[in-house]
Amino acid sequence: MDDYTWRKRLESRRRRRQRERMFLTFVFVVALSGIFLYFTVYIKTPEYAVREMVSAYRSGDVENFRRHVDLNSITLKAYDDLTSDLFKYDTNLTDRERSLFENFYVLIRRQMCKGAVKVINTYLETHEWTLPGEILKGRQLGIDYDLLLDRSLIRHTSLIELEGIEHRGEEAIATVSIVEDYTQSPFVLKLTLKDLANESFHIGGSELEIFGRKIKLPVFTFNLGGTEWKVVSVDNYRDYLDAVSPILRKNLADYIDATEEIVYRYNGTFAVAQDVFISLQHSPYGIMTTEQRVETASYVMDTLIPALENRQDELNQIPVPQGAQFLAELRKESTRITILAWKTYIEGITANSATTLDTAASLHKQELVLDQRIEEIVHNSAIAKNLPELP
Image (cartoon, rainbow, N blue to C red; front, side):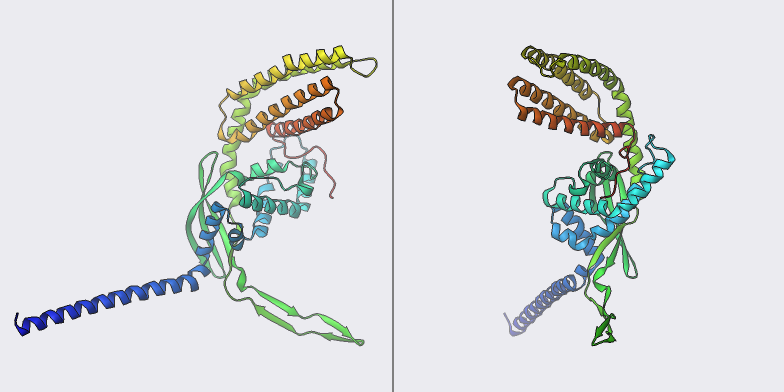
């Protein structure tokens, strides 16, 4: 190989190595710039906040979810949207009663929203929907909180993905696709985000009295700086309810119509059974004899419980539309609790055990609560008959 050819090859190799070094340098700079932009720019954007919110909700990352969502602000506005027609379909109320209840639920707005925040936080931690308890337990505020949650759609709504972000000055509007699980109805929620870290706060300005002289402290204004985008409201939640709730109500109405004959027929059966049961227990001394206990136990086990099981079997044969799942599950639970209460009662009178009879009474109370829920759903009733007193 001559000297000229050798030099050409060396030059070609040198240029190739130079291009490779330039390419590696370019890749390194791009990667470094990407990392720099991600940690200094992207994680401070509303896009990042919404994506993290959706991811945290799915994975149950409570702390990360709270970092990007102001639940207190969201629930206050959502409560107004949810309760705006809460009493619209309750045919048992007069106009005056409806007005009283509407005003009452404005007064308890903060307690109800505090309960909703607790429910959501518990769900994120355990992936189980529970009730808030405390003052919202049972019907202390005149409403079934479990039924209210079902009407809110929160327990059967799935987040899909972020569709886009529109910046509007100090705010941003995110569009997030969701689906209502029962009806598989798609919807696009609009969420308002605010950069709460850029909000200002003030210190000072108050007056102090020292040695008889009033001194006004100077006012210092601080800006928190940094970036902390949070979702503060769901702007079209009412639209979501209006889009899905009619479908669910239609499902519910169809299911109620389909099961009406079964329920009516067995109500007659149970009315007769109740009269028989009362007559079996009748005693001039107020205490059941041994023979009465045996006869009562036999009647409950051979007649009442089979009738309950047969009714549930017939109800199970009726197709349940997705929007009626809540009612169908309540009926199943009511049947289960009722049968358990009767069996416990029989055990109590057979063994003459006051403790067991107390347990039966407690189960019976649970059954009554479930039956009241069922009646309220069937009759579109939202609240208890009497306006409760504020605690």
